[in-house]
Length: 149
Image (cartoon, rainbow, N blue to C red; front, side):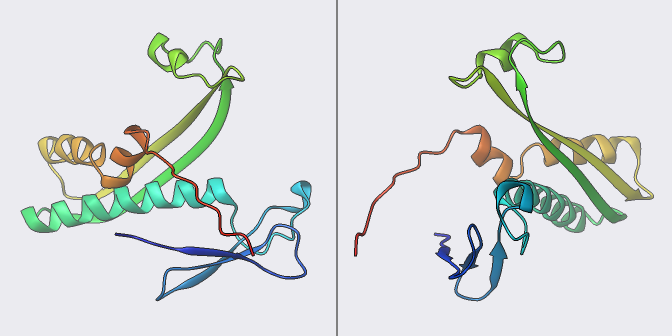
């Protein structure tokens, strides 16, 4: 099981301290959203989780296969597009939320090393199977509980 605790930081509108028991970091919103920009926001954290999981998965796989993967860069972008947007497929449109928007994450991989075409193709297949991506595509269930006090 993976667990984190997120706690408000007194004196800040949207800043929160996140801890996993070993590490701590701060999340916030930019000034345009009434935040103090003390750290990345939720969508940056989501993209960083997907990007780092993708890179780690590729590096682990290449290392296990003893392939010459020297460096991985994952560039990610998130945007909300109206379901009528021309770049969306019918399947993507079907996933629109109640407000008619589709969350789109674009992931661009750069792989450096003396890789063959077959190795590069296989690494692209492996990237699509990273645990974070599988979790996002599985539509995880979020169960909310409240402790008042």
